[in-house]
Image (cartoon, rainbow, N blue to C red):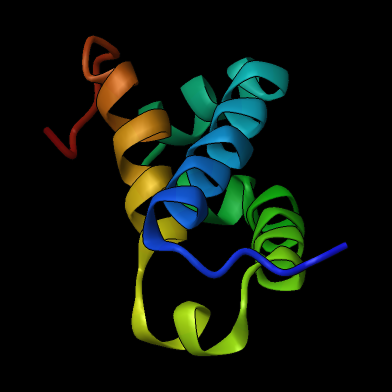
Length: 88
């Protein structure tokens, strides 16, 4: 399988991975936001997602962009802005 070498495709992959994390970990995300420990609660899932993203994207593109981390914020955090939390 060829590595992804365009920013557009890398961004789509990052958002798809973040979307899957969000879909399959709804309760953990809610708990993590409420208790202000989201990144601790989702550490394993986020690491697994990052490893998948890294394995599918060309190294130079991976090292010069932050698409994965941006997707985590955009897809997971922003969509949960309605959850009561002391962080916002």
